[in-house]
Length: 332
Image 1 (cartoon, rainbow, N blue to C red):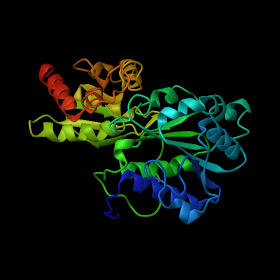
Image 2 (cartoon, rainbow, N blue to C red):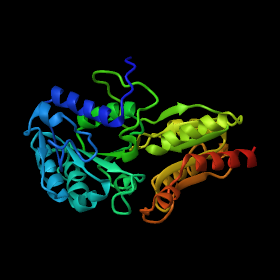
Image 3 (cartoon, helix red, strand yellow):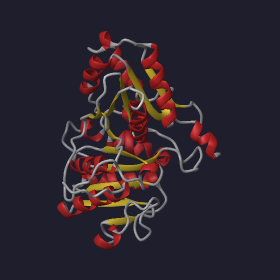
C-alpha cells in the first residue's frame, strides 16, 4: 500500500479519473466544474484531461442538471453530478426523490438510474444558513436512494468508485471542511472499492461506543486520543453508508462497552442517527446497555454566520470529550 497522504479533494478527483478511464459512459456535470475546477476545486484538472464532452459545465439550474443526469443514466450513461452546496439539492428534489429514486421500482426493475450526486455539505466555512446544512436525513428517508458520507480521503476514494459502479442512484455527501485536510491513513494508488452498506470500526475501546458520521468521525477520533490519556477508551464506528445502514458492528460493540453515544452535525431533531438509537432500542443489544444513550448533535437552529456562533451550533472535539467523560464516570 502506498504511503500517499492525500486530501479528500485529491482522493475524489483521483476516483473520478479512474472511473472515467475505466468506463467511457462516465461523465461529470455541474456548475463551474470545467475550467474553473469546481467551487471547492474537486474536479481540478479533469476538464483538461478528459475534455468538455465528459466534464460539462452547466447553467445554474439544479433542477435541469439533475433532470439531464437522470435522462442520461436511463440512456446508458453513468453521470456524476456535482451540486456546489448540498442546500441547493432543494431545487432538484422532484428529480432526485420522485424520478431517480422511483423509476427502477415503477417499471418493475426494467430500468436503472446509475447516477451519483456529489454534494458539499456542512458548516465551518462562514457560509451561513443557506449554504451550511447537513441534509443527509432527507435522503435517507427516501427508498431507492443510497446515501454515503465519507469521513476521510481513503474512504472517499473507495466509496466513490463503488457508488459509480452501483446501478442505482447514490447521494454522496462530502463535508466541506474535509476537502483540504489529509486523512489519518494513506490512500493507495490505482483503483480500490469500499463496499456500500458496511460500517467500519476505526478504533476499539472498552468504555464507550461512539457512532459518528462525516467530519464528526475525525472529531470523535481526536476526542478518543485525548480521553485515552485519562484512562477512558472509546470504540469509534463510522457507518460510512447511512442507507443502507449496517448495524452489526454497532450491536457487537455495545455488547462489549455497555454504553452508546451518537454524534452528528445535523440538528438533533429528526437527525438520522436517531435511527441508530431506535434500532438499538428494538434490537439485540438493548439488554447490554448500562447507561442511557447519549445524543450529541447540532442545535435546532439555522447555521449562524458569526464564526463563534457557527462553531457553537455544532459539536466540537471538546463537546465529545466532555460528554464521553461524563457518561463513563456516571455509569460505571
